[in-house]
Amino acid sequence: MPTQEQVIEALRGVEDPELGMDIVELGLFYEAEVDEANVKVIYSLTSMGCPAGPLIQQRIVEAVKAVDGVADVETDLTWDPPWSPEKMSDDAKFILGFGY
Figure (cartoon, rainbow, N blue to C red):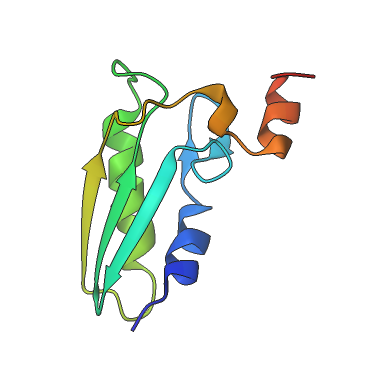
């Protein structure tokens, strides 16, 4: 059975192509619900009109399906709470020049 930590680690390989950083560091990943071999990833985007949205969703599914023991992946794009730069890791804020 996959663990939440394995799922999160896999998601570190999913980059927002516009920002060149992974969705975990950017604070776009909200939660992973693991139910035996099924995983639901709750995530957001930087904006509703994000042109990379479909690509990010596809890469989330691919990355999580590659985790040993995962049979099915569901994604849930949410706007609640809305993403903001405050959700980024300190490293991401530094690299992208937010708050420094």
